[in-house]
Image 1 (cartoon, rainbow, N blue to C red):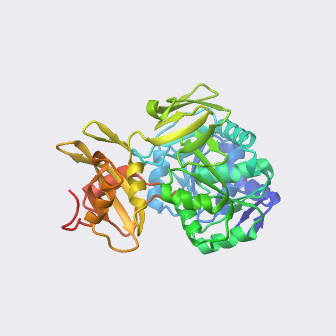
Image 2: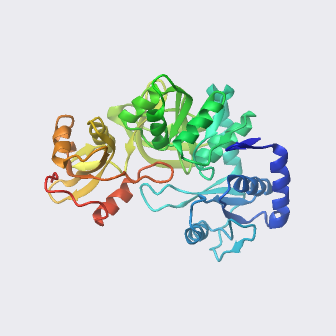
Image 3: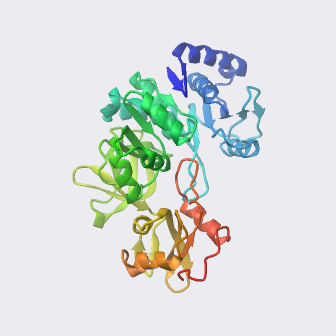
Length: 426
């Protein structure tokens, strides 16, 4: 059973609907097909998803807010031969032929460090991830998953919905980011475990009365700024964190988060190799049971107790005259400044230092860039100081709450953000 907003859909509903969709779409005669699906209603998407998976075919979930032209482009790029766009009448696509042995879950990478690419994982790999997740992460067994993130993304679909069904739980899927409605759902749910983005968790933590906590929260996808982490941790009776990538799925889970960089313990179906300490950090390289080696392009290390610690995306690191600058260090320093609400540090070319730090920030009132730079100078080393500081109304985030520093840097270079005032640092 799955509860979507205020309506409960039992197993019989999905079995009956999926069987009808299988017949209507001719799935059994095309079990080698690759289907892209973009439906506005979550229940429609899940019904067709279960039908496609049962048939052993392949599916590319597309976020329901995607315009038709963009959805079609994604489908063709993923090698899909059919697109269901808010209709059971499929568009036949002239996609390049893609060979595969088994049905697959097709996903587009986040694109935070490069152009999005199609990642394909067969259903056996997905099943192994779910089995490992349930076996290694027992803490939520008596909790109710509340999925307040897209059911088309692996975080919500696999970890939120499919894991809950594997445990015999009834997940609650919330189709709005309205924080007041989400708080209402949480208050009505027995021992809720909230799967959501860092931005939504932060918003809810700020809205909660001083004496109220969320029973449990799960964060994923990006390092929480220290200021956000402290608030969310204080407002969560239990706080969990998971780490993964498109190619491997969920890699590690932390059952009791005490530091934002502590991603968790590696799931038993995977092995991970990286540095052995903060001073010996290296790329996190993952190997699955089939022997496939996955390079995450993330910098981290394994602590003495086996905790996987994340430091930075390797592509996000800024090299200032041979000295490494990690964007989170700059962001954490800025976000403890009074009135600052969000920040992103990113790389900017510099003819003298090679690279320097640039900074976008948002605040509850107008702040002079020079005052921000003076604040930074009291909390950061000279090579970490931003050379350019711009205030914006809101930091640009993706639908999953992540920040793409690559995208921010490109948009900044194109002059998309506000022109710095006369007092800007340079």
